[in-house]
Image (cartoon, rainbow, N blue to C red; front, side):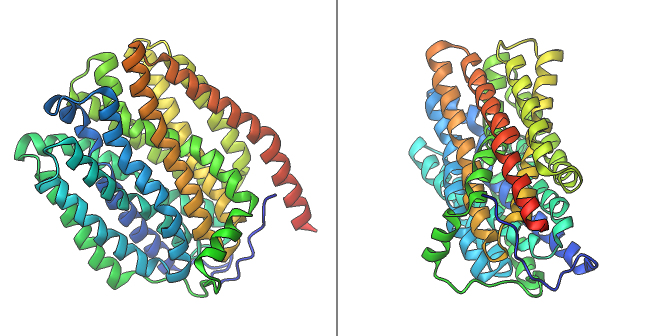
Amino acid sequence: MLQPSTQHSEITSQSVPGRAWLMLALATLGFALNFWAWALLSPLGPRFKDSLDLSSFQQSLLVAVPVVVGSLGRIPVGALTDRFGGRVMFPLVSAATIVPVLYLGLAGHSSLTALLVGGFLLGIGGTAFAVGVPFTSAWFPPERRGLAIGIFGAGMGGTAISALTTVKLVDAYGMANPFLVTAAGLAVYAVVAALLLRDAPGRTVPAESLGHRMAATCKLGITWQASALYAVAFGGYVAFSVYLPTYLKTGYGLTQADAANRMAGFVLLAVAMRPMGGWLSDRLGPVKVLAGSLAVVLAGALAQSPTPALMPVGTIAFLAMAAALGAGSGAVFALVAFLSPANKVGSVTGMVGAAGGLGGFLPPLVMGTLYGSFGSYAIGLILLAAVAAAALAFTGTGLSHAVSRRATAHSH
């Protein structure tokens, strides 16, 4: 059963202070920089495959490891953000991410083992999401949180920065360059965040222990309902953002640079649609936005499954799925921000964010394995369509009824 928010904050529906928008901008910038770092290995996957003679599965594992670590790490980081606030956690996560970035750029790219170790630690950058959602949510009243969380979520465009710049910087200046540039950006942000970030006035600080809070979070219906939907929406986005360069190079024979640029276009559209998904959720309700998004993903995956010509059918299918996955991701966290208890937003965000990231971990491995076995991506895309259909059925039945019942009970 969904739980209504019980947040009591000095940020009221009549007033969104200018500082709230500044905090949102700083949080979004931090999210983008950490996601830029988190996605550094993906554009270089085809290069490492050739230089280290990796199998399809090994290449998929290489780009998936940061995803799974960043996803699971969101659970404790979200809970820690509930306790210590984004003012402490944003600089801390950003500074910690510098270590694996420098390691990969300077020493950790000569073997698969070294890359996996660096990728494992690089997952720290992916936990920034679980810091930003509770931090941002506390600054905005309930009826504006969908838009605010959607704008913050646009920071996932850091993966597009990586896609557009990493290969070019390596080609022009050597392997270390994109890692050094990213590390410098993270260092500057960590200092700026430590100086300027402030937690919202009236922020609810939990008094219970971490274990007690995690147990209580697991009992909330919203935790599991949103986790399942986010595993499809954001998981689909993450899977494509890390595997699309490989898919396009293998399935269509594109060059590494062309494949990375097209992946960047996919990411940018998804990023642009995430605030739109939050904005529409404020007005139409997240259930309607989720249902529409999942229907588009279902249709797009089926259209792409036979590997049609890239122009126009393949391009239209991928862009439609990008828009739908972005909007759907925004809608899920509009739901979380509205319905989670105020002192558990970080904990719920951590669990849901982990589910989303894990949803993006498995598909690249499945796609690589299926292609290695059958020489085709069709089965993988049909599986995506089946998952989207199941999520659509749940959204239209169980979730819709639960939201209606809770809304009715809360109004009385």
